[in-house]
Image (cartoon, rainbow, N blue to C red; front, side, top):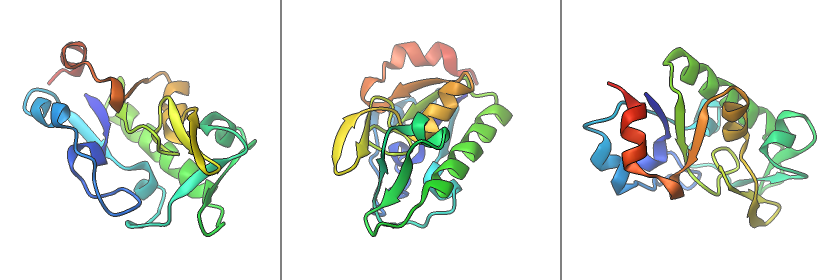
Length: 155
């Protein structure tokens, strides 16, 4: 089973109330068991919601209380991001997911790039960092290799 950022499967859960469906994943949906989730919703944030960014580090730093997640109205939403990451990780373990495909440039799901301060920088989001810490392979939505995923996915 593969955990997937729900927005990649067409679920309108992004901060702007939209989705970012990935055609490669949608084509694979009949062959692979996907577990769609949105960590920000799991953490209690609404959709749509005010965009947020990591301030003072990356997702790993947020988990270690060295950085915060702040929305564009300057509200601290660190707790919601951490709670969402914990819930996503709990679901991944419950469903025995060994792989997660996450949406880049998200302060939750980014694998190689996140929104930090007011720009896109290298770094991992809060949920991706926790999933990796817990031994789950995290793959960027920008680097999907369908042939590599099929053997890992199981039905």
